[in-house]
Amino acid sequence: MATSWLRPLHINKGKTIAQTITDRTNYADNPDKTRQGELVTGYECNPRTVDTEFLLSKKEYFAKTGRTQKNDVLAYHLMQAFKPGEITPEEANRIGHELALRFTKGQHAFIVATHIDKAHIHNHVIFNSTNLDCNRKFVNFKNSSFAVRKLNDLICLENGLSVIDDPKPSKGHYGDWLGDKKEPTVRERLEEVIEKVLSKEPTSFEGFIKLLEAENCEFKHNRRSVRLAGQKGFIRLNSLSDSYTEDVIRKRINCKYTAPSKEMSSKSKTTKTQKYSLIIDIQNSIKAKNSPAYERWSKIFNLKQAAKALMFLQDNNLDDVEKLNEVAQEAKDKFNGIQTRIHAIDARLHEISQLQKHIGTYIKTKGVYAEYKGRKFNKKFFVENEKAIADCKAAKEYFDEKNLTKLPTIKTLKQEYATLIAEKKKLYSGHNTARTYMQEILMAKQNVQMILNCQDTEQDIKKDHEIR
Image 1 (spheres, rainbow, N blue to C red):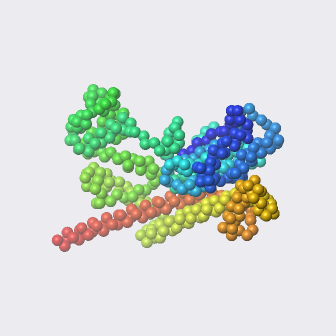
Image 2 (image 1 turned 30 degrees about the vertical axis):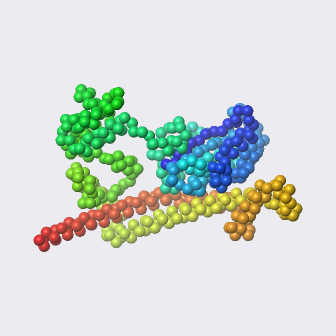
Image 3 (image 1 turned 90 degrees about the vertical axis):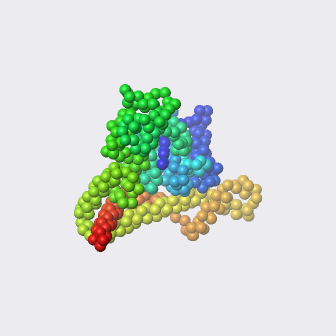
């Protein structure tokens, strides 16, 4: 259930541009929240010197264009929060990097800081308002936050993460909004009471009203409305959701209608775009045994799904079970192959990002480390340059760990990164098609097996009766 928002960052009152940028980036890459900076990555900038690099780009922009703005936007703050327990910090950082890269189209430098101090893992993305060529600025177009949310949903779905189907605007903190468990409304409570009363199987609408009154509810006949105990106003039955209007309640009492459960309703929302559904095993369904209406509905539903399965087999020239099994396996192999390659690309992209970061650090600090060695590891020099020396050592340890005897150039890594992104984009264009086809053929296969099993069972029952 990933959420996101986008906000422009202006100059703080009483502070300079440099101080404002430093304040914002320092909040994002807080070591206490990012595992000592391990969960901070950058694109076309070093997270350690991002404030300086952003400031230099502003100066170069002014030198090139001469343009200034009274209420200038220095950078943009993009936040992305995930459902608790659904994602690892490393994966969250990778997805945040992908969101920022695709939203800015690779034209703006940014850092991604993954915070793990809350129950929900969340990303803070700070991207430079000035582009990489320092000749233009990001245009905060109308409905940009909506575009971020759509792109965020797409990326999360591509990575198998949940999204909010019908997001509502929230004034609270995103972590609070994700973690809140809202109390049921008065109408929802009334619907729960009605469901409880109907489970007692009243034989008439009048009997339903008596059972409703036994639950401390008051029924007003002239307005056809109900008031819960402790509530001030009445609620009309016809103002409730479709399964609880007076007409539907009467049908349910007479077994002419079966209200879908809330669980089934929520599933139907997520699967409404699917063409096929699994056939219901009526023989082993406890609900079918206890509800004649549900059993009747199940049989009609199964007939429809069997017809859809038959049409699918005819459309795809699958005239026998062996061929169906073979094609189903091919569909699974194709989809799994695409997914495996995407995961491999993601791993390499992450590796390239890490390598770029360490190479950049090494280039900036190797001179200091060389001087430190030249001074025969002088203690005073070490104290004065401790951070640079430690960074250089960390970079060298990373290179040794990866067995890199010769470092690739930043230009080569950028070219490889761009090539992999293009390949991943191309794979994604066929990813959804392959997944949909696999789901359809596996659903059809399962339904065919269910139909054949039902036929075998009927034949066994007939043989049993003949023997008797």
